[in-house]
Length: 155
Image (cartoon, rainbow, N blue to C red):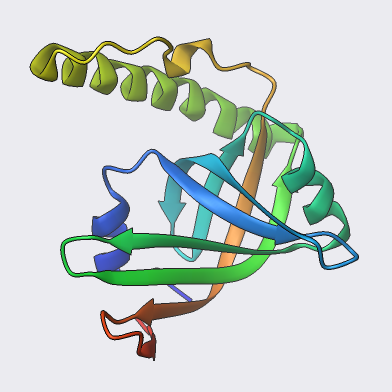
């Protein structure tokens, strides 16, 4: 399923997205990850904690992500199958682009801080270079209306 332009637009300026996974006993786990890029039918997230999310995906490669369009009071849930990219040529290519993404995120936060007077204690450039990429193939998108109605989103 190609990701609809509306969702790409809503996520364009977001750097983090929470992902929900479950282990083989169906115990849920949700954690924020860095939204690296959206390409075709895939979301690429960076996981530098490399803990429960990765462990869960090794035994149950299904994931779900959700976010809110606050302006329109609509929510979105996207679900699909996940692949871990830990090494090899694809990993090396993603890592090079990810380093640039971290610089951009940090620069944006510095600029925000200058505009608002808000001081940040940490910046993304401090994030460990130990990372795994999560490649999520989106197979289902549901829009949750302001009245709680559910709508299947098709591109």
